Amino acid sequence: MPPPSSPGGTSAAAPKLVVFMAIDGLPQRQVLAYRDQLAPDGFARFLNQGAWYSNAHYGHAFTVTAAGHATMLTGAYPHRTGIIGNDWRERDSGTEVYCTGDPAYVYLDNNPTRKLDGTSPANLRAETVGDVLLRTDPRAKVISISGKDRGAILPGGKSGTAYMYMSSTGRFATSSYYLKQQPAWAQAFNAARPADAYFKKAWHPLLPEAAYARSLPDNQPWYAKGGKLPMVMGQAQDKPDGAFYAELLRSPFVDQMSLDFARAAIAGEGLGQDGVPDILAISLSGHDYVNHAFSAESRLSQDHFLQLDRMLAAFFKDLDRTVGAGNYVAVLTADHGFMPAPEYSIAQGKPAGRANAGEMLGRVNAGLKSRFGQEKLAKFFSASALMLDQQLIASHGLDFDAVADEARRLLLADPAVAVAYTRRELKDGSRKGAPYFEAMRNSWYEERSGDVQFALKPYWLASSSPTGTTHGSPYEYDTHVPILMWGPSWVRKGEVSEPVQVVDIAPTLAKWLGVAVPAQAEGHVLPTP
Image 1 (tube, helix red, strand yellow):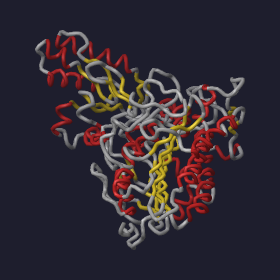
Image 2 (cartoon, rainbow, N blue to C red):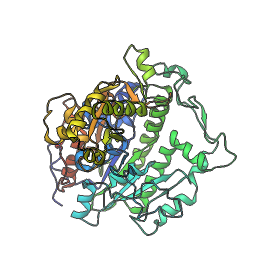
Image 3 (cartoon, rainbow, N blue to C red):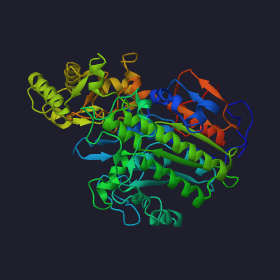
Image 4 (cartoon, rainbow, N blue to C red):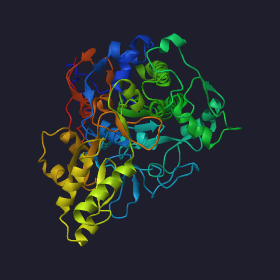
């Protein structure tokens, strides 16, 4: 491969290893909120020695885990990747489709595979940087690891090998899509039963109580059950079991195991040890579970972020030793940010609330019946859209666009809804310039998406639960994520404040690796400090 010109403006050979990291559910605001409490060489390595992009955003509206993970290394938004949500519903049957579900494959090593488990990238409609790298040089290796199946499979692309944490067994496994059997290094890792080491282990806060004054105290009324530190893993179990292994996801310990498994992969696969570039993608999932349950404003989230910081510092130290500090580049981002809990926003004097999706659908159908005389013209919500019953509409001789227009009007009359656009508008672009229209178009994939794409008002969420919070909006708290880079041979030091997008990461990595930009990519090489 020819040496690419680095974003720093100098010529540099391709890195031996690209370490791509995603922190699931990490909003940019958290990265800077605790900067004074960071270890010297975790997140601070990026902020003090690397490039960091303080105005980085997603350009699609439905900011959920799968959509973000599909965007990162393809450089394309859902309108090109086809990954419109974590799941969606098939129009005619209403059957749920999981983003990485594929009944043709199962997890290896006797790990149970349930109906909607993620086993392959079959639904992904765009290639990744790793796919291009492996096509350019089949000697390269692309390994992707995550606590979630979609967090491993989507960044790994069609050609890499994805390993995911099995919440039923506490092991890491790949699926029969990728391999016929697990490699010896993965079998050895699982044989040591690392998850069991956390049974009855307590998650203690890292710092003295006074250090958490800037975040919400434990046990807020709207927290999910167990919202207090210290938190003992497996407290209700007599021995490690599926409930205990799943509980580890909402803690720092699943992230520690993911990094330990990454260490095993580096050694077992010889990543970064020859003249052919490799890619190691790691998505750390715990922060998302913590923020869903307690919010990014909680003490638990602050401490989890600081726990991640110390884990990164230890991991970078090991990479410096095993791969060599001058041989790899590290890139870190997030799949989405996080909305403050509605109760927190209300306390801050902001209009906010929880909308019941079933009640919303009922109001739309009542309005459609009043106008058109037919029951249930709206079938269900799918991803971030309302799906109309096209067959029923046609069988009664109704004009589909007229029904969609009325459904849009009814949605906009709902006190929780901010914007809505119909299939016709999204296809022809006729509402260009309207609020959030381009972001909504970027989330809409014609073959899979519904007929009226919509977004709730700021600080509102669709949930019948009185606890926790979520993400999935086009607003800054969900779109504004970190893009952090380190690698002295490829990355200049400093802050970049000009607007950039997550789709810019893939073209940048392609340039460093000296390969073509993924075919569906729509971003640009990131600017330099």
